[in-house]
Image (cartoon, rainbow, N blue to C red; front, side):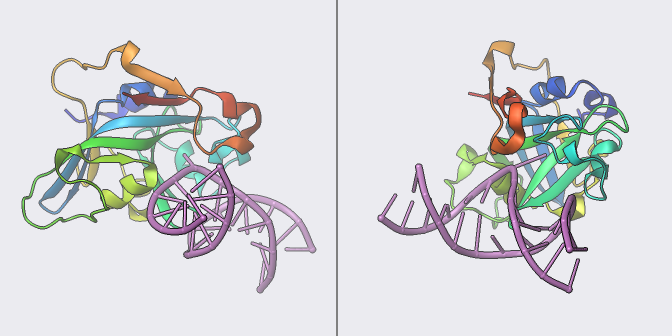
Length: 194
DNA sequence: TATACGATCACCT
DNA sequence: GGTGATCGTATAC
């Protein structure tokens, strides 16, 4: 079942945790890649000094001020892309960064369709880090502002049945790479499984 | 127009 | 553990 608009319109910290265990799905033509979301981070509001929106609305960050359920894709260090999903209401800049995905499945036995990083094959693949993740899923700036509720190209599905993720299985920690964010760097807004 | 820097990763020691 | 790659943004001039 595809996650709809309402799923993303909730409190960002909730959405970040609810996304754990869901499937991130990328389709290009008939080729499909699917993985379980293992790690997320929340970026909330202009008061969050770690967020790109802390400096206000710009052409780059305006996506975060837009409708929930859209992708915010940006480039870091001139090399890697990061995938975020916009949350909460319009005009409030918030998003969830997808940092880690595991148990990758590819629905084609022939040739690696997607870029194959030097990882172990099969379903043991773990993409730890937004850069690797985006390389593998072929996520780039063309998908910036993409609507994830459309079930095309890129979307997220809930596992069938009740979510098996128990609260106790969700671990929290400080976010990564935000030492410059003052008091905000202490926030435990990174969530992960395992 | 120019400059500084970062929500990272791979490779080195 | 430390560093270099590398480029889109924001900011300053």
